[in-house]
Amino acid sequence: MSEEAPRRHPVDEVLPVPKLALYGFQHVLAFYAGAVIVPVLVASQIGLSDEQLVYLINADLFTCGIASIIQALGFWRVGVRLPIVQGVTFTAVAPMIAIGQGAESATAGLLAIYGATITAGIVTLIAVPFLGRLLRFFPPLVTGTVLTIMGLILLPNALKDAAGGPGAEDFGGWKHLAYAGGTLLFILAVYRMHRPFLSSIAVLLGLVGGTVVSWALGDTTFDQVGEADWIGVTTPFHYGAPTFHIGAIVAMLLVMMVTVVETVGDSKATGEIVGKEVGDEDITRALRADGLSTTLGGVLNAFPYTCFAQNVGLVRLTGVRSRFVVVAAGVIMMVLGLFPKAAGYVASIPPDVLGGAAVAMFGMVGVVGQMPREVSAILNSGITLGALSAIVLNLVFNVFARTPPPEEDAGKAPAA
Image (cartoon, rainbow, N blue to C red; front, side):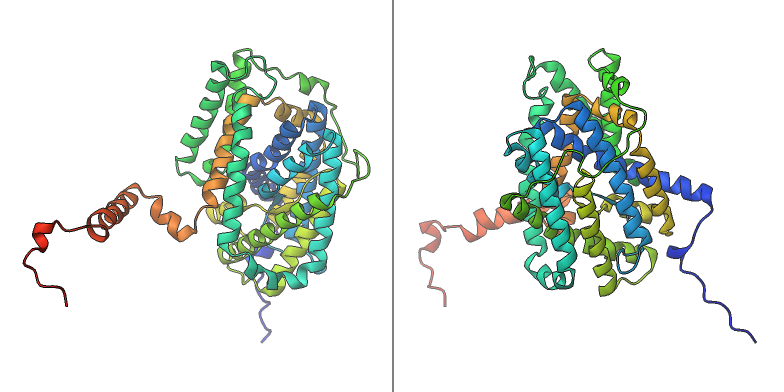
């Protein structure tokens, strides 16, 4: 009797092209807002022009596609070969803004960011065999504290945008606050619907909705779309040779240490979802993909890359385990990165709408970093939090700190 051929794992299954395209596009939708919001935030804070922002968005999408293909498809000893989408790490936003604002010009700031990004990517590639030993110095308490600080530091910038953006003639006007507040409330309402897919694109929906309302009321134009080219190709070192500053490099190396923790967690979580064991060698390949993608990010005018957690949730939601779906998503991202007019619509988002969305995103970053999941799961319940508060307050004011009145002590024998 002939032996039956071993069955291919669902992760390695190549689906029909229509399904690959459909499921891949769904991954793009889930990741799109998180991908484009980073260049938008960086550009608004370091003073880039609309033309530069359009180019950054295209470069980011194009490189995201390459990075996702590297991680999901893999080659040699690079790539975890799981359905994991790579995107710009949000952890890098605050350091990149600080680097850009500390430079003499917006373009000089970009070149310093790219130099630090390339260096951090190369160091990650070289240090992969030793990173496992360093993880014990970055427990959830450390990374959580970093995330909380980042969220709190960025909130004032988001509030300035919500008020109309620095330099606006009617800064703080009611119309700006209405757009920002409406966008924020819409995002929170969609997020609280507890629909996994809608929650994953709540920010994108808020940005689109707020921009459409602002356009309908005559407060937003899409001039950037008309001025943008139909086709645009991302070229290496578009703004010139990167510069290397020790402070910027140290900041980006710290960012990469945080992304290492993210990648390890997301890789293991994805492995559990798809039913495939993720060992030390798999983690090593995933980290090599992070390092290579980050290096390419600096070369191709983009940013540091890591696994996107929202797409891990999408894999759980849909049950589609094929890694080639993410490869298809990567191809779609690369195609989108070739059309500047599409990026022009993103660049048209008014500052107040962007500010409302940024408040939600930075607030979520701060909350995520505050406490372990086990604790947050308890404290997110109003009933549980109220009960715990009552118990603790009772202990503090009525038990531990109670001083019996003199008449109660009179005639009582001392305690043994």
